[in-house]
Image (cartoon, helix red, strand yellow):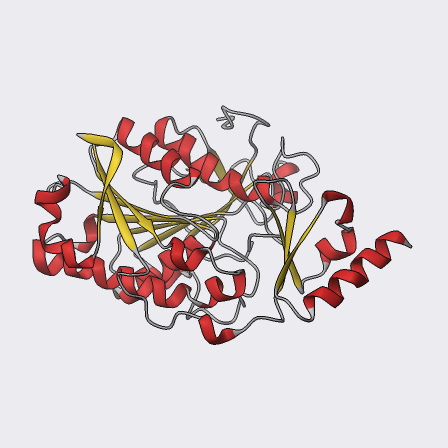
Length: 342
């Protein structure tokens, strides 16, 4: 009875407000499993719950500007403190940041509620620059990502279009060809990566989607989400299908570690945040020492029954990624770092 009362009380709150905070004792399984609500844990240990059906659309970003999005440039010479630039600084990016037009570039895009300081950016940037002679361009779209999920989700097309235009300007102003760019994005950032690819006419050489966000995306609609047409090769890692992520095949090669829904070492993980993070944790590890080996298979069940042992294998993650046969790949990981078992 108590659980039911809490759930009903929240629906009453949700009818007048798009999000509210609950204590752990107030969180119910019914609430977690109801697709109408999105639940995530705050840094303070509370649970913020958003009603996905009750949001004011007037704040949705239709056209992003440099007030919404900035970039932080890291190089092997400057791996720790990124130099911030905006669109108006683009023509001076080499002088201001040390961006090297003779190096490839890795563009990193955080997800909802993130910023350039988020763990995904720091982890991937640090690992990439330890091993590779590249530029790293960290995108900060936090002014939009900090809004409620519905607004952030419905703004990913505008964000992707803006960043795509920036990359095209690099081509125009510095003769820096699009094919030297790899884009990696987590959660909503994965869909932004796809929108960047579409904006640049599919010319991006490699797009890496890390557990693309699931809520409010529709399989039959590709205009605002990651799909194989967005780049020359789209590589996707799924770790939390059905909760925060979306297990739909979205790339040329889609990887499903441990089946792609829940990850070992994450415990009960009711709201999926641990498994959702695993996507960028696996990718970070792969940048330094890639031993994640996936096997092409029709399902995780068949993979577990050793029915695909003779099939082609492919490395998950890494830089540059391995481009083999298209399809779905399965593998197992350890419960704690190092995660790879290969």
